[in-house]
Length: 278
Image (tube, rainbow, N blue to C red):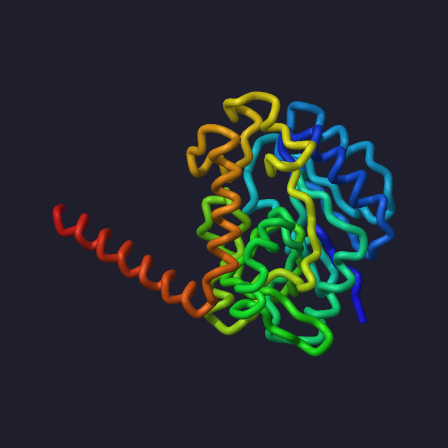
């Protein structure tokens, strides 16, 4: 049996995206309650949130400045009422019925962590389908998922208490502040629902709505991921997306955890080396 869910939607200066995202979400008859947070938009995105009319929109917060994701997430955890919560980004088109399938899986199995839609392109999965189904697929009764050490912070569901337990209060706020890797190391199973539920990420250059296509240089329309990785142009960004999907689908979770610990060890040794010089 599925359950009603609470969803968080954060936006900042993405009027062209948020209009499509919100209209698409509200066009469905999915059972959710929506909490909207605007991060001080100046391009009209806040107006889209303000004028939207749907009884499922239960709260709207208009922050005067961009506080990124940590504070909106903390606010959402305090405000939300349902057992299962989730988030979609302002550049994501979710399919109808996505919350039903995922919430059923989460309710039926206590060790399920964070489960989401596939927000890469369908061809990215097809390219590695054979390997992924062999080393990443887990079955849970009538459900299955493609397990991964972590998944992106959009178009997903999770138990509210689990999200609160793994809230990263030291996060700088840029990324969604739930420690998904620690959740996996502690034995929770996260991943993408299978058969994959595709949610279109409009910032993907393959999307007809991608704002980054407006100019060769990314500049103001650049996705947050592109900015944080100092990616210079749209082709470089698309190459990174494809490689990211390939890496996730072709490495087992056990190997991912080993690699995570290796990097942690290297980082620790580097910090100790730097400290020794002072």
